[in-house]
Length: 183
Image: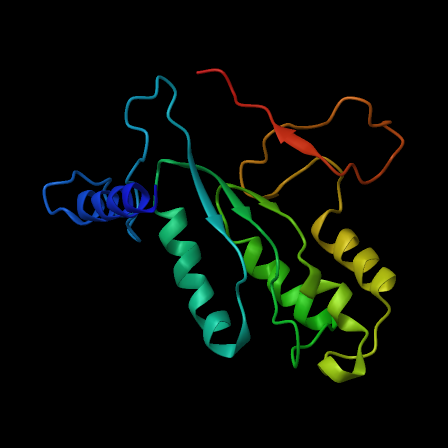
């Protein structure tokens, strides 16, 4: 049984390493390369996260914004959170305000999900981020980046709807979705 398993493992490795094996195209860092070209309703997202960290990434962020803005196929930009490093990075209102200014440069609807670095990593003295309470930082992040519940940042704000069951009186629904406009 061990010989069969070893032979099978060797066969799998040989096939996997074969130069004749067809492979999917490598993702491109340029614009406009769809993964699913056969879709009836193609939809292009720009997904970013863990940026801008530090002075170098802050300086590069406008160029990234321009690249995304220059792609006519992009319909929505999603930031997956963490707009600052987890330690030795300011949690100040001024820093957060500067990021909001950068986010406002996007021409497409911009949906941002706060990461833990923006609020939970701002209270520990050992992380050198300031001595903010996490709930205070979360409240500030919400007020700055979500001033109108259900509305995205960026340009061409689409209709965003809260998940079913969220009371309209609740200011901050946790889950929203974008309604795709009919063509």
